[in-house]
Image (cartoon, rainbow, N blue to C red; front, side):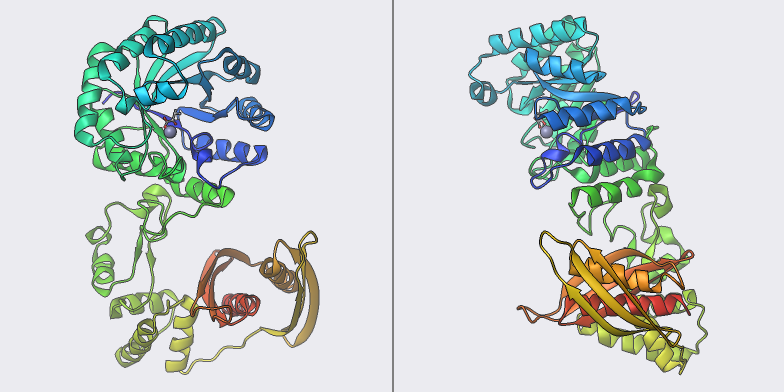
Amino acid sequence: MNKILFLDTTLRDGEQTPGISLTKDEKLLIAKEVDTLGVDIIEAGAVAVSDGERSAIKDIVKEGLNAEICTYSRAIRSDIDYALDCNVDSIHLVVPTSELHMRKIGKNSEEVEDMVIESIKYAKDHGLIVELSGEDASRANLDNLIRLYKKGEEYKADRICLCDTVGILIPERTEEIFSKIKKEISIPIAIHAHDDFGLATANSIIALRNGASEVHVAINGLGERAGNTCLEEVSSALKFLYKEDIDIKMEKIYKVSRTVSKITGINVQPNKAIVGNNAFTHEAGIHVHGIAKDPSTYEPIKPELVGRERRIVLGKHTGRKSVEIALKGFGLEFSKEDLEEIFKRVKEIGDRGRRITDGDLLAIAENVLALSYRQRVRLIEYNVVTGNKIKSTASMILDIDDKEHIEADVGVGPVDAAINALRKTISEITDISLDEYHVDAISGGTDALVDVSVKLSRNGKSITTSGVDVDIIKASIDAVISGINRLLK
Ligand code: KIV
Ligand code: ZN
């Protein structure tokens, strides 16, 4: 394959994910993050969307990022004028190409061709780079499509793109189409794939192996419906399986994925390739045993290569080896019999359907090994007032090292307010960061028991602990205080 260009469309197609609507500050933040990955082109938005969108695109342009900044543009003069006003480097010039899509705008293929010629001429006269894209091209008549791309090339478009708008391509057809286009077109060819059948990554790679040299991607596979080709998947497959020399900074991938997930509010499914929570997590005994001997037994690549860490979690499928590794990780000493007893208790909790946090394991171990430690922080009292327009407020009294401390703080909701008040109260003795927060309802109904697990860290040490209560605020406070006590040991 020739050098592969990556066009990241997280801020355009990705933002079209149902439920996402980004402010201009959020868009700028994502653009800066995506730029650290070394993508070649950032599709920063669609100029026709709104004043706010144009203002966000202008801010991104002003940031002077390494990537070429591009906007989606229809083949109409006003969109190209907006693009010029935003000072972008390039336009992603999109026209309908299937009968169905041309009918949608009431044009036939000759009229679409005229629109393309006129738009390319205008954009090129004004110094823009042009990527001509065929919308629904995977369902278009291939000869007509190639004729349109050839016109684009003749009028000096810089790149062309085939959109599999509704994700219906299969790898065999992708190979056929791209091989045919490649024979007729000399400018770079891109693929814009959708994941409606879970084939976006496969189709993108096949396209790249058969004439395409640019791939459209989105972080976490965001995008319309089932999303676009996922940057993390396609770049990892190219780098680690196809051994392609791509320019993506693989070790930054996880951080960017987390940031995008936080900003957009769209969680990554736990079993998602490369960036899912479970992608480098092991629980089953036999796997952990193998991993302890040689990580490659059950890992395709080292987690560090994509900015991740290996995690061993305990649960129903845990083996003795996992418990042993976890206990040693906490610096505990134990006999074979102790290990057997701790292992038995871990299994009992797992069989009850509960996840076992580090805090749970330590509590079991301390019990079996007859260890005790002083709890430096204890909850005396808390009070939370929830608000709607006014933020929620929490006040809290803690006993810290046998002295009462009282503080109050606000938050976006009652749990946030309570945790903020708690952190403020203990801030005199230590600084703790809350890295993860997870809630599970153990039973149904409004009186359900909730199980809150948290991951806290302090001075490079981290711990997961949990709290269970019918009250989510109390469960959260218990989980955090339990973690704080463990970290203060
Ligand atoms: O999927 C698609 O067809 C698109 C185009 C509008 C570029 O996103
Ligand atoms: Zn799309």
